[in-house]
Image (tube, rainbow, N blue to C red; front, top):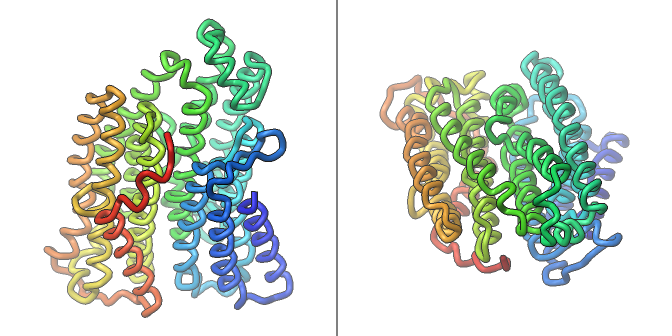
Length: 460
């Protein structure tokens, strides 16, 4: 609860600083505020606190994933001063809305009631509609926010109707009461409940960008300002997959025949389409959009085959994925700043005059591919182990094949940087920017070499 209070206060404080024209204070206050929120989050470890008749539950799972969300936001904010350097207008609206989106994300990983889940999703979604169109002068940004708003609003209706049907069957919004209803066996014979469950899957699948509800992601990612796209690809992705994970592991374990095959098929389709479509993208941003889609499929393995180790595997995967993705977006921001876009041709020969940036991007992409000894490899290893233990060997083999296919697009910028001739452009990265990307790269290496620091924190 301290996490929600502190982040909400931080968002209001950011808007207040903008109102009194203290633009220079914004980022320092945000960075300090996020660190304070992170500390308050860790202070709730092992407390297993329940609030407002279990509407909010801050157990260790909620605390751990809230920490990942806050830490990811902190990492993104470290690049904000560079990204918005040419912007002269006040930015308290953008920063404030990002903080409120984080509040919605924390609600999504700590809900104990379907009403609170819906409030968290809508708090996050409404904030994202605004952020996607925050670059008002760009047609692509306006197009992105319109598409995202129309589709997101439409899908929210599916989610809300699904919640209503589940309530009509189980007579409660509480996750514990719904689990008791499912465990009693009544849900298996109740068409109303099954319809509500499937509608809720549609609503959450859209947020995670799971096939066939992924179609919005490439266009919205491409049109949204790059810093905010990094936020969508990491924080939003983590919150959405954890919300889905909690829904199934807490309430639906006794009704696996209703949804197990469906979730497995959706995961398989997402892995296949995300990886194969990524091969044909002409620029880095759309490639990372399809990369994000494919990783949604990998993370679904923790849902479809949940067991004692699945929570730990998902925690490690979301953190590893977020760190590598933010690193890739950070380097891409420099390329877009120098060339005006992020077409793969602009990566040609980049390593000649930008050795550090090229190395950091290479390590990030190798981690996303799953190459040892980086964090991405260990993350996939733990996740695949959970799926094998759950009896989904065929899905793991498919995921391994998808990882092999991903080499084709993750290596595109690497080959361009090291093996192709380019214009020899020097990227405009200040010392502080380099320190930040080096920190992210070292973190990727550390997670790969010392995964035991995180594994075992959570109980299944």
